[in-house]
Length: 133
Image (cartoon, rainbow, N blue to C red; front, top):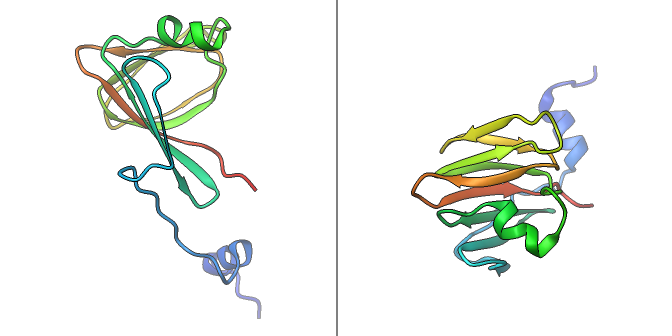
């Protein structure tokens, strides 16, 4: 008989040499400071990259990042988790909906948005890039 258990399917897709990988933000591959009050540390996790981004109090994409990158809204896709603070998002080129993302919440933000820190604390997010092959 054929074993159809989930473990067998996982082994077939990942292979017998699959291994667990980790990243450590205390030893980032790269640290970027694109504007005052923003720090992005990047680590590799297998074939993907993970970013810890600190957005200082009062940061707003349309005020702080737009002059650097141009356009009328952020054109990046963001998949992440808010580990500290509160992040506001407005889908400028979508449904126009404003969303408030709290500490402990995960998010999937498509291109076409503006974003900002809410309140009197910095926001720290952890974001995940899609794996590359």
